[in-house]
Image 1 (tube, rainbow, N blue to C red):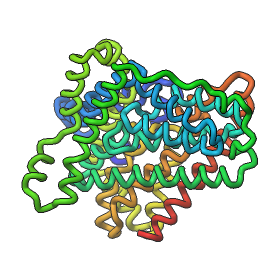
Image 2: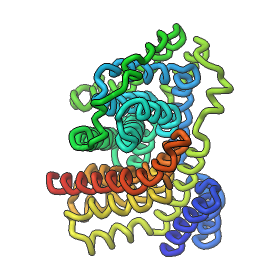
Image 3: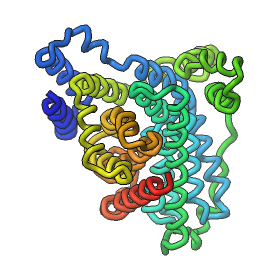
Image 4: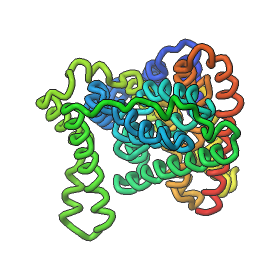
Length: 433
């Protein structure tokens, strides 16, 4: 039965990749067929496998953050940050990375940030001597890192998957923050090496165009209110768990933290945003990542069937019995990187690998945080490949005259650099921790 479930997961990924139909829809169909007709489950039990909490949290948080996207707040922030660096062009890669990180961390999400930051970054590459590779790496790394923040889209998904796998809420918060920290530190190292050693990476012979860049307009009243509301929500969501970690014996801090739920808080703030007329309700709902939600929840149902079939336990026992403990995080990172070439980190890779972490941690005495970090670093390492969604967005944003030259650079330089960097980072973490 475990073999049947594994084949179903692989088939769902392959069919989604070949047909461009949402993988989650195939996963729902396989979960129903295998669960009901092979494992004797009731249809109602299959429906209950839909990860309702993860769905609600992503829906609610993305709904609130969508107001900052549709009224131009996040785009205006990016323009201001890049304008500040116009006279120090060698800092442009860092500015692109930090701008993308900040905007994604405020809820824009990976794909949204790439959609409006990638064209701007590639224009900067044309106007300056900043190379296409370092520009693409900077915007891609930043969008990934920011989305991994504990209160942003990917970070929320990671926390939900950890809790579903048996990790406590407080520990999931710490582990998710560790993922964010790792995906923030590694890009800074890679970008710095490019700036130091790349002939075209420093931007030192920038043309006058960037220095004469026109100042962006000021924030509108609506945008200032949106920014204040977004920062307030982030502060509330982060303050409670941080207070509990800093004051573990404080009953008040524990009580407040027990009542904090980011999905419910985002729902309240969405109502406030609508009352303040910060955006159109229909546009906000239409901008939600429905395809991502279907993929994540559909694969969640199929992975739950795999757990009931004992597939995850068998995988954990096989890894624990055949691979040395020191190499397990590295192997998980490599497997995640290979999987992400054909499937989504959020919808397939992490839902498939995260459930195996607690069993491996107890069998091999490895810190679960290390394996969670290794999986995400490996999975996101190849996202800049032109065959992945991130790389294809960057390629699609490129001007026609540079697109032909950008394709081999993303495939043969950027993707291998990202993979090797993640592999070395996982190797270092395995030896340190």
